[in-house]
Image 1 (cartoon, one colour):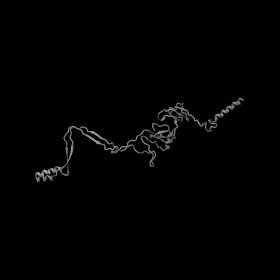
Image 2: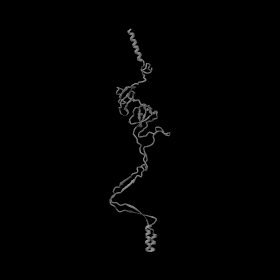
Image 3: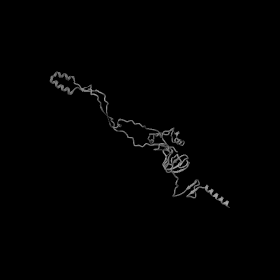
Image 4: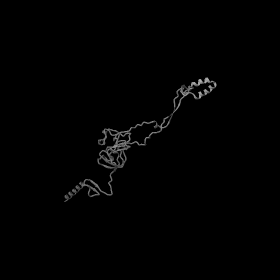
Length: 280
């Protein structure tokens, strides 16, 4: 009799071991090892402080399929962790993103290296990427290299433009109007004891008036000399002369840029890095 009772107990325990476990339900789903049912309560996932995505700590080792809620902010750049849900793929922790991220999504970030499936758009050869990222890069049209967004603004595509093409340049030709409207003052170096050449321009005295002066006598000469000095000749006469030597001296000059301050200022900006999502 004792043997029969013991056999029945073993059979019951064996059936329990093979059956699904239900918490809050007497009829758990046949495809679930564990089903928790409640209209008023939730499941509280284990909360632990992770150290970095590449470190299993505080676990002993990486375990594929492990899910935890990280409570700490640790690590730097591509291995940093922040509070939130993480799952383990057997070699590292991967953050469960709060929103859906698709292959080819672009984002700006202050991080400086690849992280969690996001790859820096730095123009590198795609052969340097992990195998999965290489496949995804090719699937969205990347060629030999991923695009290089270094020192570039991202622009929305127009109907006539090709996606991922480069355009524009970093140079701008300035006109005089673009210059600031300022005067530059300067003093030349002394050049020793020297003189200066200058050109003197004046109206000459016509010879026909001088001839009439001799014929009309002294009175007429006085009158016509006055006319000579005031009227002169219609043609312009120029002579070149040198000034007297003025010792060792220098000169002051003022030059205007002639600008109108017509310069487009650089918009206020913040420097970030650009990343593309190619999957973990």
